[in-house]
Structures are given as C-alpha cells and as structure tokens.
Image (tube, rainbow, N blue to C red; front, side):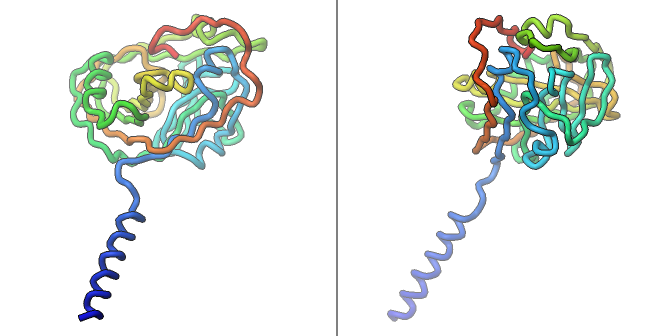
Length: 253
C-alpha cells in the first residue's frame, strides 16, 4: 500500500515538472535595437549589425544607419527599401539605429481582415488582441486594392530630428498588389521604446516594392500574430541629445 502511494506521488510530481518545464504557447521574444525616442531625436548611428539581428529574429522592421531607407525582415531575409523605391537585400555587416525583430511562427490566428482600410485594420486587430497591455508581432498576407508606402533618404550629420527628415520622404502609391504587412503593436505604456499602437512596413510578394505603410485598402487577406513575453533592448551607446525635437505625426514614425 505504501509503495502504491509513493508511486502515485512520484507520478503527480513528474506531471507537475512536465507542466512547469513545457514552453508557454503563443509567446515570442522581441529583440530591439535602440529606441524610438532616440530615433525621433535624430540618433541615426548604427547600433546593431544585421548579422546580429538575424540571430534574434526572422521577421521585423526598422531602418538602416543614417536613416537610409526602410527595413523589412520577412522569412529570414532583410530588405532595404531605398528612397528611390528600389528594394535590395541588406548585407550582414550593415548596421541599424532602430529595429525590432522576432522569430515568427504565427501562433495567434487573428482571422480574416478582408476589405479593411488601414485605420479599420488597426481597430479590428486591436479588438482581437488577447491582452492589449503587451507587445505583439503581426503579419497580414493577402491582396491589397491600394497601398501607399514611403521611404526616407539617407541623412547627413549633424542628424536632423526624425520629423524633419521625413519631410523629404518619397511616396510609393500601389494598386492591386499581393504582399505582406509586417507589423508590431506597442502598448500605451511604452512610448519611449516604440511607436504606441500599430507600426507597419510592407513588401510585395515579388520583393520589388515596399516601405513604411501610410495608407492601405485590403482585398482578401488574413492576419496572424505572436504575443511577446520577453523583450531585449540594446540602448543607444551615447546619451541622447538634450533638445526639444518635434514629434512625427502618429503613424509616420
């Protein structure tokens, strides 16, 4: 009888250990180079190499040293959308002053998002988040009836603040394209780290067009995501400039 009781207790303990050790579902680790606060103030020095970024994620967005265009990481490949609209693979030795990456598996199914405008998409996705107080990575694949993306020209030191730099942005209107939105949701409590709310970059399926998304109208499309349960931030090396800088309008960061 005593032996049976001991075996039963051992079985319960083994199950408990398996439950504790099992990985939590629907979770990703977000790796971030620098902060949006630094970028807003005009800190465009390279902080992390793309070789290092690739060690921490295969999906993400950001920019390149000197604010040289928009970065889109998709399926493990890092792309630069330049000010002239061309798309190029980024060399591993290149560096970024701001980027966010995760390893994306699409653990969360956010369902269909057919026919939505960009503001409608952000509202619908926000309503489907399990917990709006945490970060999320979101991928939207499908058809786009229309989409306007942008890219920014490389800046020269002394760096201007971001609001000034994006005044010279180039706009890329597109119609009837197939592609992917690469996005991150930042909760309201972390505005110094990342733009609050939604931040999207875009890349067409043929990898020839893309950029930071300013407007869109979706066709048939589906969204999946990852909830973030851990975050690593590599802060800027130098103290931030002590100056008042205009902030870019919401959605243009």
